[in-house]
Amino acid sequence: MALLETKEITKSYGDHHVLKGIDFTIEPGEVVAVIGPSGGGKSTFLRCLNLLETPSSGHVVFDGEDLLAPKVDLDRLRSRMGMVFQQFNLFPNMTALKNIMLPQMDVLKLSKKDAEARAMELLEKVNMTHRAHVYPNRLSGGQKQRIAIARAVAMNPKVMLFDEPTSALDPEVVHDVLDVMAGLAADGMTMVVVTHEMGFARKVADRVVFIDGGKIAADLPPEEFFSEANTNPRIRSFLEKVL
Image (tube, rainbow, N blue to C red):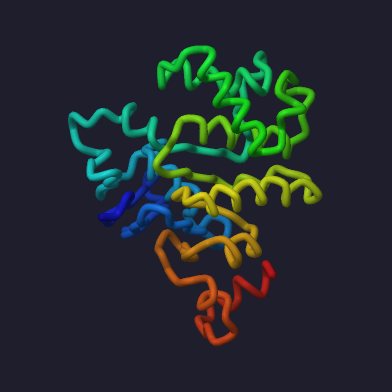
């Protein structure tokens, strides 16, 4: 059974139809890169997966439960879905370590000792133990994003959603964040990644989903999507501009 599935989801803002009926599934352990032109609906689609944006119609089924059902415990389901944004969203008044500890204590009800041990373990995983006691205003963009990823992973999510996680970063630090994400993928984390990083999509993703005009225009393994044998004119035009 798919871990996460959408059925004919649409999203409109007045007369502006952003999503026009999207069917999507992801199996446990899969990594799906979502790419496409700006304004095509990628980020809106991603935010509909955990109802940060509520679809206008359709269904989102996660771990066997419909997130749009009337009496669903949305907070409980969201706690199993990690989300990493473009702008980090760290707590500015807390050190890197405490940023990772607090959600574990509040949501998972871990003791301070256990939360700290898990946080230190994840700081090591993202190569940030040397910055554990530093506040966000003393961290670079790439360091903040690695902390944000560690904080999301600390919640033991079943799926991780990434909304263009490197778009706000200086080019020289992008690879540090992508390396962390590739490590998560290698460890078997289920991931949906909206990204402009074609190298990541080509090397790490199991599937590439191309969203254009509010619809999925292609859903292919990366070797097929990026192949010169792919003659889809819309995809060829897009790739010529970004590669």
